[in-house]
Amino acid sequence: MSSPANTIPALRVAGNDDIELVADIVADAFEDLDVIRFLVPEQEHRWQVTRSWYRVYIAHAIDGAGQVVVTEDHSAAAVWFDRTGTVTEPDRYAERLAELAGDALPRFQHLDEQMDAHHPADPHWHLLFLAVRPPMQNHGLGSRLLTHTHTRLDADGIPAYLEATSPQNQGLYHRHGYTDMNPPTIDVADNIPLYRMWRPAGTD
Image (cartoon, rainbow, N blue to C red; front, side, top):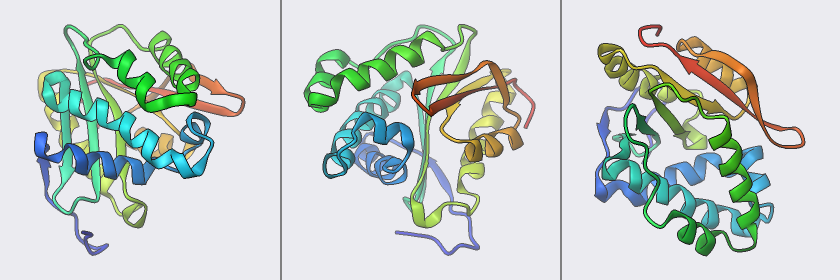
């Protein structure tokens, strides 16, 4: 389903029945990102392999490790993790990653190691995925999803962290109060950086 470009659909918190839907949204939105091409260079396998990976995290967030917010028209979703207390990883993560990644496992492990090594220690919420299906990008859905959760975080005095995938995405996040961190990037591979960004509470 899709919405007319001049309307902004309602949002809702996703539940267990939405895991497959959200995995589809993220897979559709991220298939051509440089970091995803690095993880699975073969296009014929990329969507299915990475969708299985996203699904592991989406289910973990919905199961209580964070929160997933989705648009009612099924065009966009945000996957957040609460890192203000005990941080957990998905059940049997290493085993499940090996099963789904196949020959790509070393690249997934490398990305995980780099992201873990550069993750800030201060309590925060982590925006792992902000995904908008390609036909609906640049229609304000990302901003709508950000504002929805930022309002809650601001009320509770909680900062946010994310890794932007491109300078264009950095611009969106700058407009929502995120600033570049030091070091500013995670160098996943040659010419494939992720941009580390932090948002203090109350800066939207």
